[in-house]
Amino acid sequence: MPRMTVDERQAANVDAYRAAMSAFWGNMTALEQIVTEDFPDAIDGTSAPTRYQVDAIRDLGNRVGALVEGYSVTVPF
Image (cartoon, rainbow, N blue to C red; front, side, top):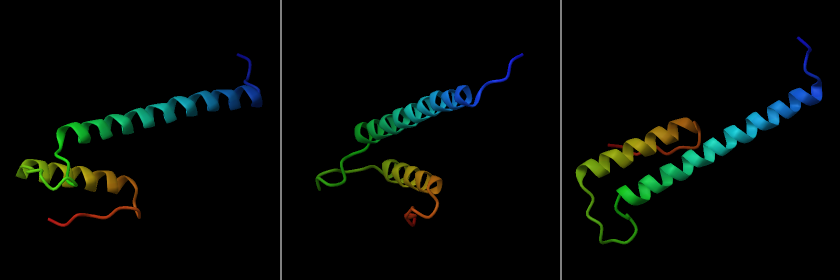
């Protein structure tokens, strides 16, 4: 089996990177849409979140924050 050239390996990396980056932003967009649609707006001052929604958004925020260690703010219980 012939070995890949440096240019062929680089092209494979570019394709894999594009696919991974596209998947990442697709997931971020989906997460943003879910939060926007399923949780009340906290800024409008008229929302009345349930206890479940408070716990769920706190947990989600903490989990996302754990992915970006050093850049998160943990919300206390």
